[in-house]
Image (cartoon, rainbow, N blue to C red; front, side):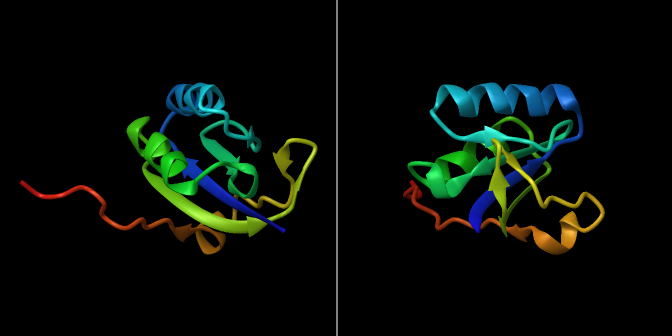
Length: 98
């Protein structure tokens, strides 16, 4: 099982921009497709930058799940059950307040 961080977007266009930025950052990005971007966080350098990029690109939900990753995609993704499978991805606040 792989750790997967996924972002759900309002449009395919925003999801496409996120895919491009994640690929440029060296992330392992795969399907499903459309308005969902899935990243294999098990094979990524760090999970927090992945979530930051997804949020910066306009993801309305960023979550983490365990799943099967094969042939460059999240193979056991179920769009009907996605809300039950994605746990909100929360990262610690690291920026100092002025």
